[in-house]
Length: 555
Image 1 (cartoon, rainbow, N blue to C red):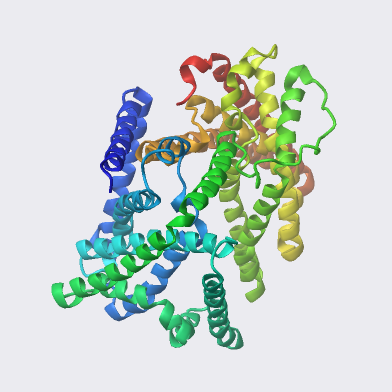
Image 2: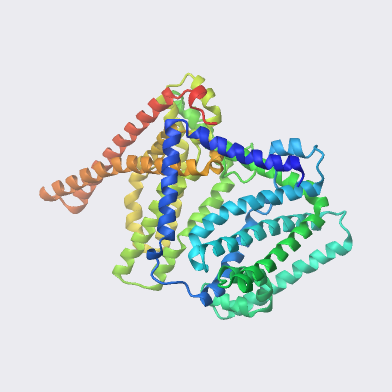
């Protein structure tokens, strides 16, 4: 590699270390860093502890299943992040593309960076799955080869895809790509037909059909070699021999990418533009937007002013409306996640099974509700981190601003819950009584959830795109924020449950009918939740009032 590119690689890692050190100079950053290191240490100890695993992995079983695991990782790289592997940041485009660097040198630079990333990610895979290897060093070597092969192959496939769609590409090359694609489709069909005929799509027997097919054996050749490295007992006959075979395959994929280097600049520019647009949406908190430019004609009637809260809420609801396509995709994902519970209830019956199904549905739904859905519905302060100075200049009270920021995600969440739980209640009749019971508590519960989310965010603001940098610090911050949010929610739920229990016992002691004491208990819980929501909103308003964009705005 050209010496300036080597220096650039070194400077990038120095910059990463400098950011990590600077983030630890503040008390809050140091706390996050320490907690992140502790969490990583606990994870390493729990996974690598030999006493945590009751039986040693069988070599034959590893050789059978490991290639499919490695194939899945490679497909994830090629399909999920293939374009990202050839992306450049905006400063790299400004300084490297006009610079005295050939296309091949830039391509080798990207491959070298992917090798460095593979070396770091290989440590994680080794800690996670290293016990299936002959030893941890051998497992690290196998996973390093796997990740390097996946990265280089994803670059080659991205360039081949660009070449196939380029009208200036020679007709023989385009015909060759077309025949290769048809062969892949035909091979996939020959594998799927016996699997579907024997109803083995959702069982491990499908892997047997894949391995028995000609297409499957060809597809698994590189991963069988990596599995032999993973389980190699002898240094020369097993580890070094099959490592050489895998290195040759990596070299062939790299040579293919270098052969297609004429398409590298165009492909990387197009991929970089798409990535920058995605990052811009992430910085604004609108990650659910599928495209950078939503339909600007979509609008809503203006809400009442509500001392300024209505204006803030209307603006965030417009953002949610223009992310409707992303919200629809998100709803489909949530609907699919209910599949295991519906499948469980359709397989067996009985009162005990019904109660388990209901518990499973609401348990999984509760986890989504508390941890995952609020991370997606960022129509509040989390999407306005770039506009905090503008919000502070508005003649609106802090409490009104906080209320306005919470209204939009609360409405979206209530709509999601009503639709999804309604669909589940139609499919599982046992859920219907609980569906009508939770409806009155959706408004205070959803408002409390997003009030807690925004309160925690105002305690330690962060830009949405910063999670990819300083990962140790971000892990510690994430754990602290999760504990803080859970603490706030428990601080509201425990008093509400106590008051509800007191109301139920009091009603029963007075000899009231069941529906009467249940209504009295529910009303008491509802009032406590409303009081807790008001308290959290007030505290969030105090944090917003003390927020200074010049001091507290994250880098």
